[in-house]
Length: 241
Image 1 (cartoon, rainbow, N blue to C red):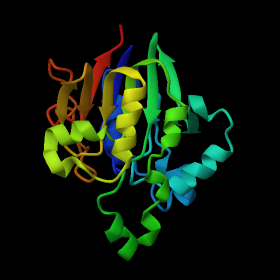
Image 2 (cartoon, helix red, strand yellow; image 1 turned 180 degrees about the horizontal axis):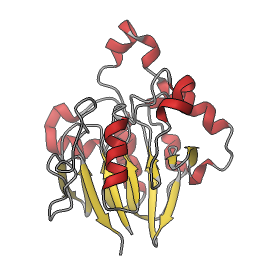
Image 3 (cartoon, rainbow, N blue to C red; image 1 turned 45 degrees about the horizontal axis):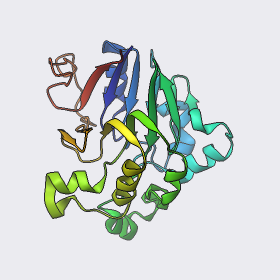
Image 4 (tube, rainbow, N blue to C red; image 1 turned 90 degrees about the vertical axis):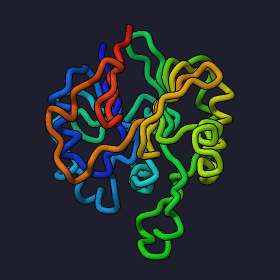
């Protein structure tokens, strides 16, 4: 079983569709800021519905429409194993989990927006309070996981990489407490628009870069190096054994 992890998409669905349908993997996991924006209620059936030839799982980022997603979740009592929004596009709400090829996955979307005040001042309908990760997430996680799939990473990881620049809001502190409440081998996230791979306290923390949202990618872009990552650090392939 091969999994392709993909960083922030920001509505670049042509590029995501190209990756999904051309890369050698069985499933895709997208790490938030998918691109479900203000207009998604009207356009989900036509614009967001793409011809994915394999399952695409995604978590919500801090630039996704949490009001819309919250209403979707209210209508699905079985949300803890994911919600299929349209064919082969599955949203994994915060607190959901899966077992794939004997590996346990825990999903936690959301993050604090560095541009929150700007958006509230000039584009108030593009910021949603649901982006904030609360202590409620701790109620859904327990035991050992092979992977945490998230939009952001724990604050102690960001601070170790970026110092004081790594502190944005309180959500990442909640993620630190989430990490401390479980055992996890790998934590894979997006959000920071850069690639990093560090091992801290016996967990491998992998942050993927974002995809280009306008410029079209080609087959060279999706070539995977020996370390399992593409040239830009926005795509990673892992084989579950």
